Length: 374
Image (cartoon, rainbow, N blue to C red; front, top):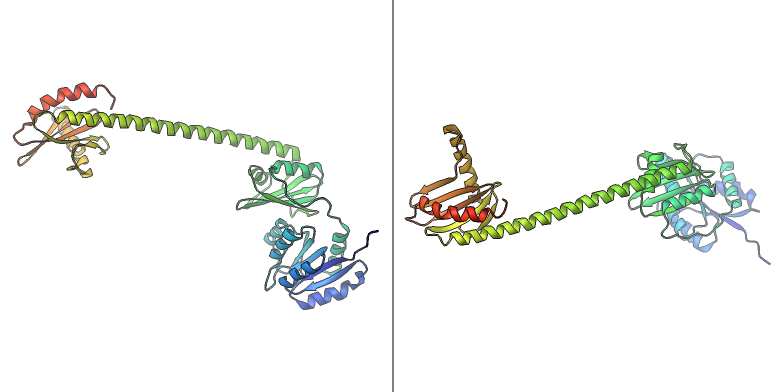
């Protein structure tokens, strides 16, 4: 034989006059439930540990633990308890947050005691059936389908990382969704695209507005269609990225092959009488290879500047393009030669003329450079 236990209702408010007033007024229902009061959030938590509470009515603004944080603690440790939020500083944002955290009802002060009494009786009579827990590896679309097929009137608080949203159902139809500044079907579609997260439902919660009129089946089909399209686009972008990486490695391989060839050329030129040191530069002013640390990065700009000036001068004189440029400074002499998009800079030894070196080097260079594209 089971023993009938008295149901308990906990009222939490830092205004002692309010808790005293509610206690005095609600004594007429002492045959239905026992009323317990607390004037701080900590007192409320102690009462929850001591008694089996069925309903909690809490104010939001309290000196130690605010009502929303108290609501979160109750939902975590005592998920069967129904929590009614009351406040004198109401706003749509506070109501949304209370709903997201799983409040049973939200009421603003001042209110009639008869309204609170009716809410308490309704909450006590309405059984919270089923199990409490988590379902792993379940997609949001599956959860929504269960709410729709079960013809629930409920709210669904959904979160993924730092993003949060709310979905409202009435008799199994999705009638409102919100996420950040977005509302309606677009907010729903974004939440359907979340790959993982958490959810909490609150039965019987009414929506603050109605922004969705389509049938739930059509909404889910459109949501799944968008998810598939996003997956295809993501796969396409991944494929493009892979191709770019492969091309980059291929270009790098060609560049390394070219650099090795240019290094071999410098070694071959070193065997020609009069050669002292040299370097290869591309048409962007990048030093590709050198055979002596005498050069620095600033020297790579010299062939570009000299050939630009020489080309401009050649166009003025007779539209001819320079093949080489000789530079002489005191006893130092150097030669700059252009091959397609590459420049060769060679510093010559003393008593060596540029013509002598050029005639010997040109044959080697033309034969070797024709073997690869530059």
